[in-house]
Length: 481
Image 1 (cartoon, rainbow, N blue to C red):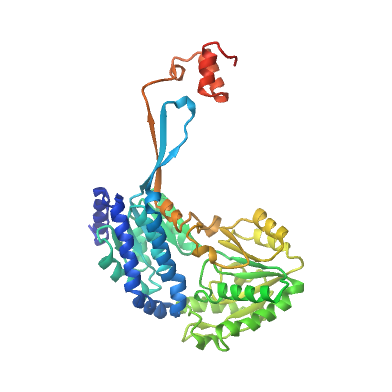
Image 2 (image 1 turned 90 degrees about the vertical axis):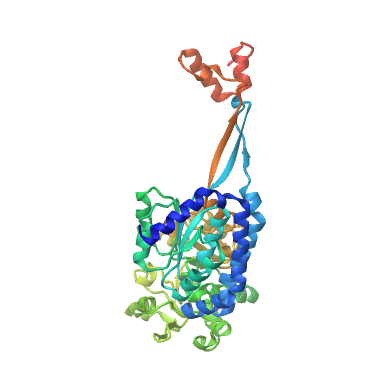
């Protein structure tokens, strides 16, 4: 038996013991996780700086702070989440009762991504703990410092017989996927998601896939200078100020009306140095590209001749420091890789439209995005975006705030993923809502059993249209069918 199989056997035995089903265990693990985030804050800051060049303010905003909030939210709601809920039954089943009882799925595998190494590792972990599961966390090897912190701290804080961290590269992930799980939760690329789904299908394992895609931002004409200034801050923060654009829910490209395009470009050019400094590379307010492979991938998107010709701002790169300047491109070819592949970096194509309403048709011609952002006060345009497009979420006049809200589910649709989590939705993702029905021996419907005859068929037909009392009255001849 391999070391991995031994670890999984320990986890299965722990789950069989029933201790993870107890509210006291779930609550204690969540409280300990809260302590881990507080006591290891410096180590987390250091690891995020080392792997991604994240400033500690960005690190706290996007990872530690959101996790602390999520744990507290789970602690506050845990008792209610675990409680059974009554369900209605037809009067024909009287006397009886029914309820939904949430139960843990069992042994779950969480495979996380490198762009938010702590956030996308521990956010689903919170839900899995709250739901009473045992679990394996496989952090991304592309953020090695962060992976190491998770591997060292989680076993020393949390219950090591119920929660394990297994580090490793692609081959380790492959071996884990060969095992039998009760749930797989994956965050990453579509290409790897296909491998995850194929492996899960062999055991009929349910999966949640948190992927990405090309998230558009529709920019309508904005009237007041206040609206414009606020919009620019939110757009640039949602693109360049969050992991240097290496975020699945970030803006991938902008759609804007031609008559407003020049003004928009000038506003963005003016806002970038205001937010990130005259030299963003030295400001420490922008993260770095995760590694040389991804750096070269993004640089190659820019190096296509027709794409390079569309650069109107930025475009400089520093391979040694894995830095790419915030870059604007005006109307790059729609058939170029920069417009067909997810950018996942600090490049912002701006596409002009004769009519802003044409943006809906443009978006619908592409795979369904994780999010659609629209900056507008036009209520008709808002209604059309909601009713005529499909995406994981729609956000008006801001970016990425849906990710931080515990009361909202986060997840995609179609190629941007399926399944959802955050807050109570994380609990639901790692739970099975079991139906429990209780029936008395007091009464019974005699015609539900064979032998069959035309009279019983008539009673069933009546039963579809009427309640139990009516069936009784019709049977007794006191009411007409």
